[in-house]
Length: 394
Image (cartoon, rainbow, N blue to C red; front, side):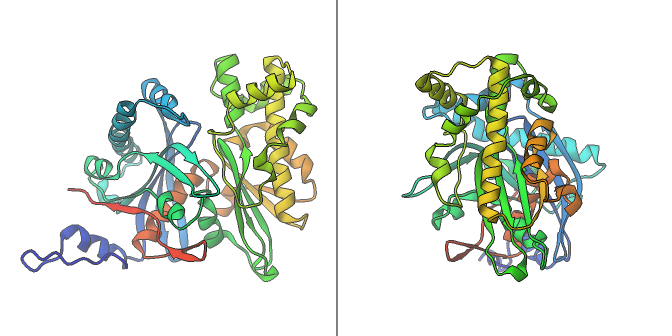
C-alpha cells in the first residue's frame, strides 16, 4: 500500500487514511466506476468487486444527461476557445450531478454507501491535445467536490500521470485488457467503438510479441454529429440511415490520407481533429457534394475502413479472435462491414470475457482506482507509474 500517512495530532492516524490502508488489505474491494465519453450521452456507472482474481461487474447502468447539462458540455468540448466561467461551473456542477446519479443508482440496486468502498471517476474530457513535444489533456469533474457530495473517497484524474511520463494519456483500456484478458495461446484483439475507436492488441503470451494499444480514428463521433445536424437524432439506430445512402469511396480514400493515419502505433486522437467541421472543410477543398444520407453512409464506411486498416496492420494478418464493446457494436452496418474484413477471425463480444459491452469503460475506471489503492503500477514509457489522485470525504 503506497498511502500510509501518520498525522501528528494526538499521535493517531487520520481516520480516512486508516480506512484506505485497511482497504488495501481487504480480499475484495467494492468499487464504483464512472465514465462519460465524448458522445456526451450520459454517465456510465458500474458497481464492481475487485480482487486478486480479477474484476466482476455486479451492476451497471447509464444515466442520461439532461438537455441543460448536455448543451453546456457541447459548448466546451473540443473547443479552442470557451468561457472560463462555464468551464469552472461545470467542473463543480458535474461533480454534484455525479453524486446524485450515484445515489439514484445505489437506490435502484438496493445498495447504500455502506456497500461501497470508494469511487473511481474518469471525469469528462473537454480537450485532448496529443503532440510530438508533450501531450496535454483536460478532464473536468472535481474529485474533492465529488468525494464530499457523495460521502465516499474518490480516485480521479488518471490521465495526467500518463502524460507526465511522456505518454499520450490514452487509450488506458489496454492496462486492464492486458491484466485480465491476455491468454497464453490465443491472440486477441479487443475493440472499443465509442466516439473514437480504440483497440488493445493482445498477442498470445507464448508468441513473445508485445501488447499494442492505440486509437484507430473515429467510430461514432462523426456519424452522431451528422445525425444530429441533418436528422435531429443522437445516433443512427441500427445503421438504418447509412444503409439507405450511397458511399463515396473516393472521398474515403482522401480522408484516409490524413496525417493521423500515417503515424506509427500507438497514437491517440479525438474530436479536436475528427469533427464535422473537418469533414465539411475536406468536402469543400475537394469539391465533394453529398446528400445527408450519403454523408452518413460515407462516414460509416470511413469508420469501418479506418478500424479495419488498423486491425490488419497491428496484427500483421496473424490469426486472432476479436471482441467488441462500446456503442458502435449496435450499429449493424459497422459490424457487418468489420466482419466482412475478417471472415476467418472469430468475432465475439466483451460480455464473453465477463464484461458487459456497455459497462467496459466504467469498469476500466473501477479497475484503475482499485490499482491505485492497492499500490499497483503500470509500465508507461519505461517507467513504473501509479495512476490517479485521491480525494477524501469529510
